[in-house]
Image (cartoon, rainbow, N blue to C red; front, side):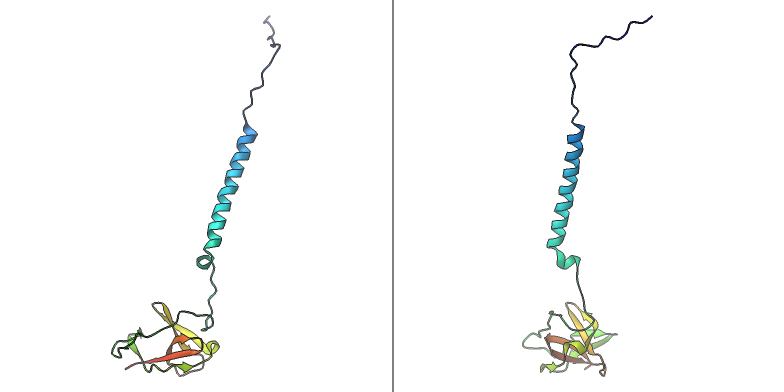
Length: 133
């Protein structure tokens, strides 16, 4: 018959630190999530944006260069070049102006119940009319 194993008088428990490793990984994961959340909240303008179909809130104003060169079109719509008709702004309510297109950094507008004339927003409530030459 085989001899029974002998149990030493003093056993040494060697810790493997498994719980500490798991907690460390969880803490590291939470730290990464926190860093990503803070970075996104600082770039809120690029993450979230509300855009109105009207001219309300549009602050990309069109300012013509002085002296203005009348022979250069401001933009083209359906292959038709549009020029400024006047440097004298017209007063329109921003609520009644609808976005009709985009010209680089500015929107083109038309009146909601208008004749199809295009406008560029110069300031809140003031617009410059565009038309074919």
